[in-house]
Image (tube, rainbow, N blue to C red):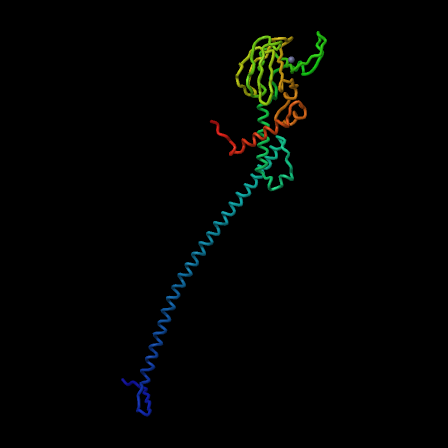
Length: 312
Ligand SMILES: [Zn+2]
């Protein structure tokens, strides 16, 4: 088979060279083909790499979307919780206001707005005031010494004796009541005296020694339930009323003394935690201010853990 050949002859001073052009072009063509093949391979590899990269990106995008949805849900849940907390907080605030109103702590609207005078401080104040009131109601005579009585047959005060025509002091309150009616201690204390006898006209009598200089007397009794040295709680039954001693009818003679002096029991009988402050106005013989400050200081110290002393 005949193949045409292109031959190039180059002549210079040293002689002539023959260059076969055909072979030269064939080589170039081979190189070109190789280059194209390499490019194609490179393209395929690149596409593969890009494809997996794209897949990775798509995957992480999916994950990010999921994460975002999770966070959105969490955010919604937290918002709901926060709203609940806000409602609860407002409710507590209302309760504190109610508490303050009930126990008579001055609830100053301006103070309440002040960040320093926060809810905790108001709660502390309210609970301290509440605790102090409960303390007073426990240790200082208050309320009635008898539940069932017909009427108050005699009040505290000076009167002219119907027979002797002399001025004398009725030192307590008389509750007209059937013999055998339960009689209760009006505050915590210790029984100083419990004796069946004439007792200078008092008849069968119990005397209770309370805190801060107060004493209560229960006279003309029938049966005594407690004895000298017994510690009694407020509201504890101590005796049954009677008609003993210098008495013209069945009744309980109830007496309160402060540092030995007679006190009108009327205001103390009507005294209760809802009307706590009333007695400070009505009963001027007791140094209330001093007693309030002393007990308040005592309670503030007890509320501080660092000052709590371990009993040994
Ligand atoms: Zn009396």
